[in-house]
Amino acid sequence: HVQLVESGGGSVQAGGSLRLSCTASGSEYSNYCMGWFRQTPGKEREAVAALYSGDGRPSYADSVKGRFTISSDKVNMKNELYLQMDSLNPNDTAMYYCAALTGWAICTTQTMSRQFKYIDWGQGTQVTVS
Image 1: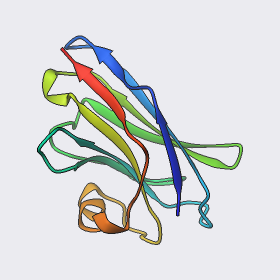
Image 2 (image 1 turned 180 degrees about the horizontal axis):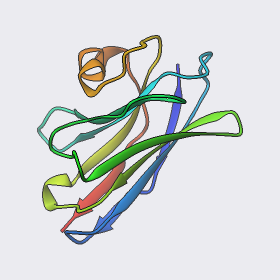
Image 3 (image 1 turned 45 degrees about the vertical axis):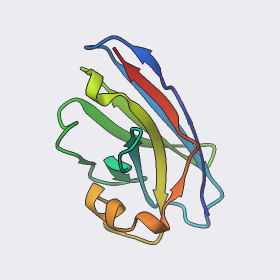
């Protein structure tokens, strides 16, 4: 299993920006599918963005295309995942979760959604837009 620790959430006014970070460790794989999900009370967790760490084409949910940017890096042999969120609006308010899906070469928001039960999760970080 991959251990994931998020940081960077907080409160921001509409139109503002936030950057989420996630540090991954513990996997036998050097690279794997990583992504960000979000969830609001009473709703299902939805995939926001996905990227194969190291060398991948980003995948986004339609609701965030053009506003959010997912990226990854390798720091001290650990995978780091980021989500730059711009032009935030109140509909973006949610708990955001870092996710890792090992053993899958195809990495899209659809893939991560379909393989939901195999995902390793971080503890979540709250984003509030007012």
